[in-house]
Image (tube, rainbow, N blue to C red; front, side, top):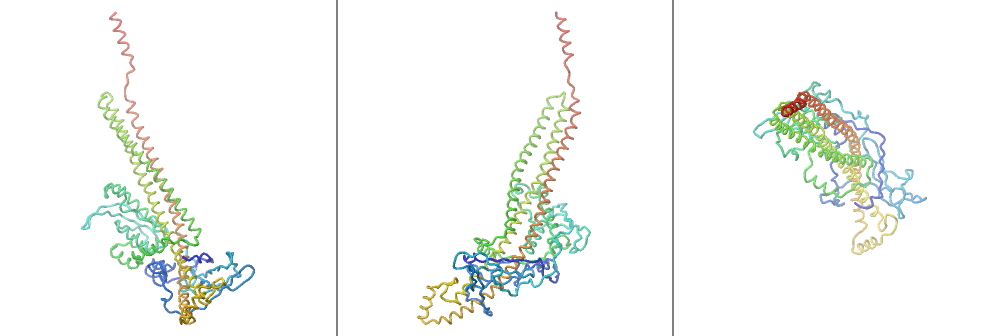
Length: 566
């Protein structure tokens, strides 16, 4: 990017949070997307601005622009010390329209001397135009970003087989009073893992600015070692799917998704899923995704927003701490499993001892059984901890990753806006150089350009005519860029507003899940120790029944034998 953009300041001041009303369609998801401005005139949802960037990373030639009416030039006023002068600088970007609210964008132009301090508002010129973005008029503020009561349970896994193979289905039961659902009574449906995948992908496409809860990995390394249809694998997956749906139920907008309703309520899921998929925005092609990634791989945000920088740092720290918790608990869990196996071996040793000590064989066998029960109780505690606590940590780590993906998508929208703004700035500078040939923007003479023009005139080139044609092309391009910059600003600001709300939902969900995991960890230990006390107390009467001779009778017999011999 050209370094000239370092002198551009975009000061966007919002006055309220208003949204443009839209007529509600058949699909509540489409209504949501429209009402929040997550679309442009090409029906692309927060896609990158490709109008002026080719796939090879270079801007299109200005001469290839379609003809548009030319726009008048504009000269901003620059404060240079105590003297106000009219600079031959590029026109200021237009006033953007975000959520129906005008937002002025101020550009501070460089001086020929050292860097100029921020220009006061009283001496800064502004240029306003009507934006072509969908944010046309303000509407009353939306309802508070709070989820409605919704309870979803995932239970009763069952194994099925058909021509395509074997799979597991889960009974999903929903109870809610949301008006998007047909009934407020509990409704149960059976869904397999591929159905959950469909729901997750649909939400990603419909809500690109939302932190969509992640699904459990289809094949984890821990799972690959064992049977994919074992009870342990199925329990882990069921709990992960439960967390996935819990996060959706706590999200104020995802819970109202038409795709969510179809997933939770449809009795003819195959056909309803096909119909709903037609309303879902199409996914970006692999080529588009790859080209966008390559184009922006080395592009950084010029004006980072501290709010989102703090969000990313918070999520990074949370992820690091969760990694540490996972690593340390894995060590603890391994030691507990080793201890449980040692208790099982200890039980077998006592049982072997009981065959040798025939006098107390019954008591030793009881002690061996008690030790075996204690080892089993410890194994149940380890299982509960892994299922309810360690699995919770795994899912929180995945949730952190989803939050970081959304924050990166927000950064990309700001990069799109800044790239277009920089391109607009360079284009307007080119127009000013064309309007004032032979001069720099700071007012000095451009000797090389003067010499070049003289040489071209000697060759018979009509420089005046060529300059007029170039100005027409530049005016067309500036007119296009004004609209694109305003739209990119609208998209970026709408994305910002949504991400702020999403982060609040993420924080609430994270706190609640950490609480649930720690409570489950404590409960598993309390249950284990209570069971252990009961187990060891039950063996005490058996151990006390062991009769031990005090040895007095033997001493008397020895004394009598000694007297007789003497």
